[in-house]
Length: 249
Image (cartoon, rainbow, N blue to C red; front, side):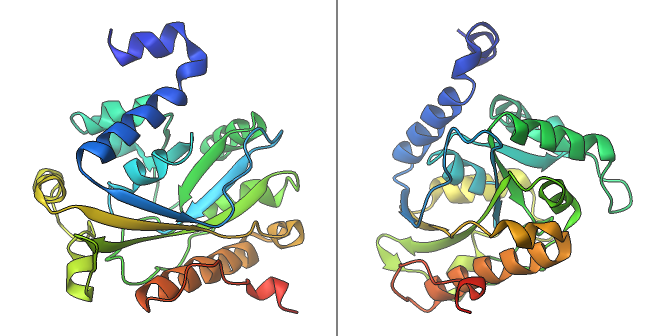
């Protein structure tokens, strides 16, 4: 039965089905995901906005294999063959960009998702990077928790770290980044044809509610957390989640 029909007739499976699909996908590819830190609390009344760095389209499969989440993606993804369909099946909230800004309607759509208690992943850089650094965070959608103190905001660092259980060098890490004018199919085949991959997902402590009252301050706090996590992985540091700056005072 096509997955669309399953989702249509059994709505409660709309998060479970992608979770199973992505776990099967990673098992077939021999991808190992190492998870550190507190996972977002499921079943919260006001949901969680999970803010992460973005390296590749493959990030969606990695995060989607760990948690039943929804994603935010640019509207162009809907037109991609196969991936557009997969994005729809994975509860994606599509964003239309207009001169670098987002519409009030889309912010309202995000707020509605969070109000239902869902976990929504936001790649706050607004684009993918080379995986060696975290680009500045855009604060557009961080205005949603700005007006609602009940929404939990949590950061996550994502890093491609190992191949055949051996640490990747800088040049090897960059090979997994989907940047510049790279086309989808060659990058897709490169990951599928490559050796077994290891990835680290580091979940950080939720940001205190008082920081969420200013979206620009919130963006800076989240960026520090994600950057510290990525830098630690790059240095080969142990995986305990570092104490964020706002908890050291």
